[in-house]
Amino acid sequence: MRIAFVHDIIQFAVPLGTTLVAGNLRHGGHEVDVFVVANHLDKTIRELKQYKPDAVAFSVISGSHQEYIIIARTIKRKLNIPIIWGGPHATFFPKIIEEDYADVVCIGEGEEAALEFANSFDALGGKIPTDIKNLWVKVDGKIYRNTVRPRIKNLDELPYPARDLFFNKFPIMKNHGIKAFLAHRGCPHKCTYCFNHSYNKMYREEAGDKKVLYSRFPDSIVDEILWLKKRETIKTVHFVDDVFTVDKKWTLKFADIYAKRCGIPFSINARFDHFDEEIVSSLAKAGLCLVYAGIESGNEHIRNTVMEREQSLEEIYYAGNLFKKYGVKLLTENVIGNPGETFDMAMETLEVNMKLKPNIANASVFAPYPGLKMTQYAIDKGYFDGNFDKLEATYYKSVLKFEKEEDGRKIYNLRCFFSLLTHHPWLLRFVKPLLNLPFNKVFWTIGNILDGYYIRKGITYKQKPMEFITSVIHFLTNYRNSRKLSKDLVN
Image 1 (cartoon, rainbow, N blue to C red):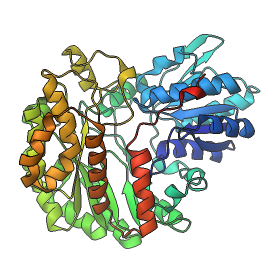
Image 2 (tube, rainbow, N blue to C red; image 1 turned 180 degrees about the horizontal axis):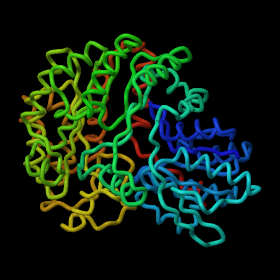
Image 3 (cartoon, rainbow, N blue to C red; image 1 turned 90 degrees about the horizontal axis):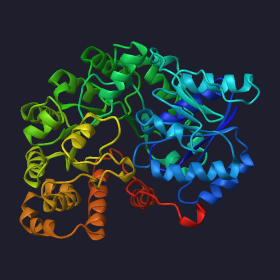
Image 4 (cartoon, helix red, strand yellow; image 1 turned 180 degrees about the vertical axis):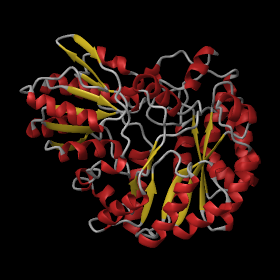
């Protein structure tokens, strides 16, 4: 089977979800390629016609789904081939199978389901199979809703991601010094703004999976990194796992093996309450250079009641001091504009960051994605009408209602100046009057430039001048923008 994976835009990192599925398909004897629209759907259609795929596949997050609907309907009209939807939006909004732009919807993990689908497709002489677990399928107007299979237990058995599909076509990804890897799947925490709570519930009820965290062997991870290093430039490794340090025993073993065999500077996503001095010192010795960790909210009610974060400010400050002690940079993740949040509550989040003094403070606005417990909370409390088509692909504009309209406006503006104010608290008295102004493109642009500046300071290697210029242009035109397709392409 020949499958074309289509993406809307190019970012810096190779999407591991797509490339893991593609790698498993290719390992199973199928042909795969990737195409990126980047606001040129007509060009993509021409490329697809030349490639002649048996099906087109998407990996979609909610917010960007509106653009993928345009892409899917155009492909369906001009090529008339099966359209496969996967990713978080498909997992938590599988009813899109009822629409004319979807023939297959993948719920949950896609590697095994995609390979089984492709094998059956070929065995049936090019017909869509209807009995593949993890897939909802529509054939001749009839919908087949299959259950979810158990999760993949041994992640080390998966073929390496087909990163070359992107590297061979997009120099910005090939030349970027940071390369992404996966060490774990799953998260045991129940934060209401994250999909993992609903994801774990789905697998527990449909597949009987009680275990929610699966980890690779540290030696296997290092093998993959060293394998890629022989072929591509790797100046920093970034582990994209939701919670890298959730298992202390595994973490210390990884640190020991990584230090002995690899030593390339690396960054991780983690929670503040997963760190103690032994973990930080061991990881720093192994090459840990940057931690992405969520404060999420400085307000106690929002953080631990609405978000169910189960994290104290004392734990945040304790870990933050350890990072400083061992020379590890810190990027904090913060969510403002939450259901029921006031401007004063959002200011508490800024104040915590001012006290903590992270190297980078990233703030986004809450997006009520399908399947999130906090989304249902917003609907129940009347802050959101449940229309997911209002969502945008970026995390910087809210669709929620606020108790006071002025609070929403001030929170949007605060996000634009969040990173600046974290580093220069004395500017607050000058910026605060600006927050009362209507949200505008000037503030949006300023926010993107400031965020880009501070994010660059978190990069652990020195970029060459042209690499820096290319990265800045890409950041402003792709990474922080929701692309909109031209109307003439959908007529």
